[in-house]
Structure formats: structure tokens, C-alpha cells
Length: 240
Image (cartoon, rainbow, N blue to C red; front, top):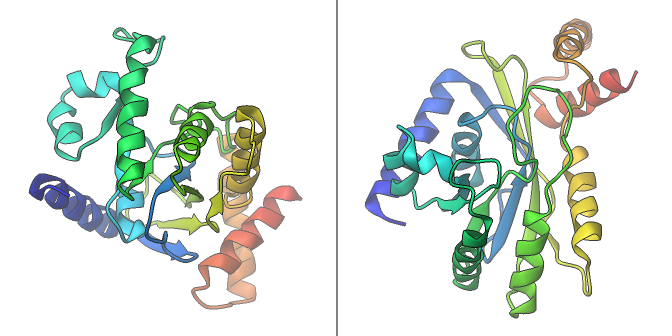
């Protein structure tokens, strides 16, 4: 990791711990080649939350338009890999061969990359349909003999706009690329594993209602600062 990337990662880690009460659930990602797969509810905060909790160097994939935005120097400093989307102004998808080559190189060296497979940041309260890029990257690396593992990540904000509110980051168990996996089947498996780590609600208003019910329940039956229990409790409340 470059000095600039290390500095940015350290500042991001400090910033999110100042603004939020950050809880990590699950073991940190292991060493070796990894693809991290978080949901994306907090826009540019989500990479900082992964940096703050992953415990190892991470390279992110970022939409190409960020490189020409005011955030361009930042995303370059951290070694982000550009993704060219057809809906963007510079969306020359043919240039994504460069992206796949960069991902293969990073994984081949035992590195960890992170992308948000929903492809967009949103506040729907649910996991949006996954794009197929993550599965294609994993299958490409595995075909080259890289023992890549996939790590689903659930980012669960209590009240993301509120200072010192709680942010729970849940790391799932790593899993390998199944032999002879199709892109569609692997994408479905990723979605199922990610969905298990997040509290899904319907509209944004329902998320606030789930939190109010959870606070009442926790006040009557305190269990201490058990983040895993809190996530499971909120999932049960959201499911009705």
C-alpha cells in the first residue's frame, strides 16, 4: 500500500469512528486473494466503513466518473480501479478489459478488492438486484488458478444522518468460487449471502419504525452491547 493510500485509509477510519458508533460483527477478512461484497446504503461513506473494519489493505472499484470529479485525486491516491458504465458520459464499456486485467493482477498478488455489486448507492432499505460484474471477476480469477474467496458484507445503519448513531458492519463467512459456476448462479449465491447479513425493510419509513420498536424492546430486555443479537432482532422485527 502506498503512503498516500495508507494515510487516506487511516483518516477515513478515524472519521467514521468519530461520526458513528461502529460495531463489527464476524471475523475480519482472512489473508489471501479476496473479493468483498458489501451492500451500498451510504454512498462514499461505505468504502470508509469497510476500511475502518476490514483489518487489511483493500482496493476499491469505483465508477469512472469519480476520477474526473472533485474526488478524483482521492480515488487515485487510494489506488481505486475505474469501472466504465454505459450510462456514464465516458461509459466506453470496452475499456473494462483494463479493469478486469487490474483486478486479475491484484488478486493474483494475494490482494483484496471491494466492489458494491448492486452498482448504485440507495436508501431503499432493501438489497437491490446485483450486477454480474463481481461474479465475472471471481470466475475469471478462479479460471487463472487464483484461489479467490468471496466475503459478503452487510452494512447496517441505524440512523445514518445522525451524529454518533450506530453503524453495524457484518462480515459473513468467506466462500470459494464453486467449480463450474455460472455467472448467474454465482450472482444469486452472492445475493443470498449478502441478504442474510442486512436488515431489509420496505420504504425508508419502515426502517425508522423498526428502529423505534427495537429500542423499546431493548429497553425492556437489555442484552448488553451485542451487535449480532441486535441485527438478528431487527431482522425478526422487519419480517413481522
